[in-house]
Structure formats: structure tokens, C-alpha cells
Picture 1: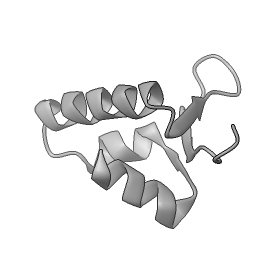
Picture 2 (picture 1 turned 180 degrees about the vertical axis):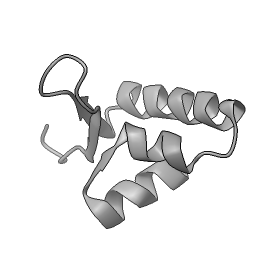
Picture 3 (picture 1 turned 90 degrees about the horizontal axis):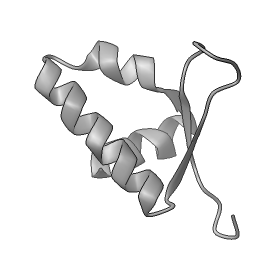
Length: 65
């Protein structure tokens, strides 16, 4: 979760596809996805997709959102 948050802090908006491409194995992708779900649950990041089958975009939530 900390690694995801630090990547988002640096790049502001990141694509889930980029994270998958950087992963070395399937287990890392699964763990990253679970961390992503937890960050969404904690309302620390927001995730959206412009259209079906487009990239999933992640960005840090603002305090008042």
C-alpha cells in the first residue's frame, strides 16, 4: 500500500496497466490489486475509467472528497 501511495504522490495519476507491466510475477499483481482495493476502501485514493476497456486510472483523494 505504501509503495502504491508513493508512486501516486510522485506521478499524481498512474495507470494500473503500468503497475502490472512492472510486476515480476502473478503473485505481485494479485497483492498489488488487493492493496489497491484496501486503499479504495480507506478512501485514500480514487480509481476511475473513462470508458469500458480503457485503462484504470488511480489518483490520490483530496482531503475534502
